[in-house]
Image 1 (cartoon, helix red, strand yellow):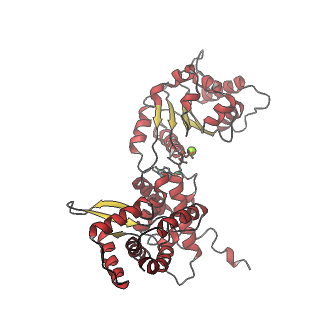
Image 2 (cartoon, rainbow, N blue to C red):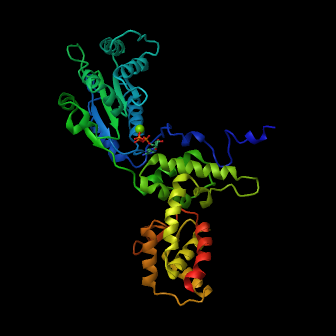
Image 3 (tube, rainbow, N blue to C red):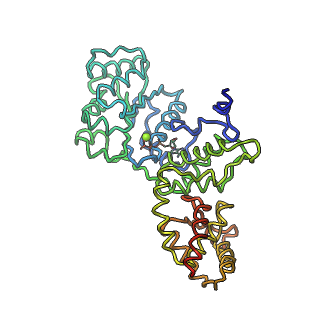
Amino acid sequence: MTDYLDHIGTGIILDNADAFNFDFVPPALVGREQLQRELASKFITIAQPEGSGRVVLTGPVGSGKTVLIRRFCEDVQRKFADQRPIRSAHINCRNASTSMQVVQRIVHTLDPGHPDRGLSIGELLNSIRKLLDRTSSHLIVVLDEVDHVLRRSGDELLYHLLRIDEDQRRNGSVSLILISQEQVLDFLEPAVISRLGQSNHIRVAPYTVDELEEIALQRAEIGLVEGTWDFDVIRLIAEKAGPSGDARRVIEYLNAAVERCEFRQDGVTPPYLTIQDVHDSSEFIAYNVSTKMDHVDDLSGHAMMTLLAICRRLKKSPTMTMGDVSSLYHLICEEYEQKPKSHTTMWKYVKHLEHTQIVVSTISTVEDGRGRTTHLTMPHFLPADIASRLEMLIPKRLR
Ligand SMILES: Nc1ncnc2c1ncn2[C@@H]1O[C@H](COP(=O)(O)OP(=O)(O)OP(=O)(O)O)[C@@H](O)[C@H]1O
Ligand SMILES: [Mg+2]
């Protein structure tokens, strides 16, 4: 009766579902070495008895801010375990958006059973001090999505955290890391900014397609059964997520493709991630498809034949070269009994298709380093759908 649940928790191509969980912190980050070095440079004294650091990290959605800091906190604690006990409290201020909730969470991270009812913020800060004193520990406080607390409670808590050691016997008890998509420095009082240090602002850029490809590749290696996927499909997924620069999106697309692939497994089809698995009919795509379909309908007859050449190849293969386009275009001209246009004109059609985002092109250097090849893909559409539409439209257009 419950046979239909058999695949839950296991998979034919899925090996480790954790790899697709957004909270999963991979053992190493990919493509962020320079940023990691910049971050480390702000914590140059952290292994010393009274050292601490301060950083404000800003960048767009899915640019890896949270995972960068989670990885950093774990790495630093492990690396300097023999020199200094370091702890961290990573608070997401979307869920704890008042100063009171934030301090309560910091206290609970240090001492889960600590009573907080009826205690003021000042008393709770005192508790933090004592808890750190007792174990001679250093605490890295991470306030993630800090703009939420700044909007609701202002920056007074930051001010208190930054001066937690004033009039105390100790120094450097707390490091502070603020994370936000927004330019949070604009929300802060000059007194807080000067304590944080203007030069401690690190800006994170959105990911490039190549970096997204590396991230997807890492998740495929961790999460999927070996031999069930290939690099071309990963590249296609990266290109599909490319315009967003968002790592979460590339992981989501990979996960969705894996789900679709698992869903169609029937013991007969080869267990292999295909381009069809990458394309879906989500709302986002559907919206784009209807507007982009207008571009298809407006093309001239020969531009349509060029696109048909592309679609026919991309139905079977994730990528193709300009040489492939040219030879298939000539075949299609024969099929419709048309004289082919010059290579330059065909090239212009392809540029136009690229401009309207129907196809995406990337240039790679050929192995011997002497030439460059253009590779075309169609990450946003199902080539078969466009091909059947074109086969309907072309005869009319050529009449
Ligand atoms: N360099 C990377 N290497 C491996 N995985 C990454 C990398 N960057 C981001 N990721 C993964 O992408 C997803 C999104 O990253 P993260 O949550 O850190 O983004 P963010 O910048 O904090 O986004 P938001 O602004 O929405 O909070 C996470 O699952 C994260 O593990
Ligand atoms: Mg985040």
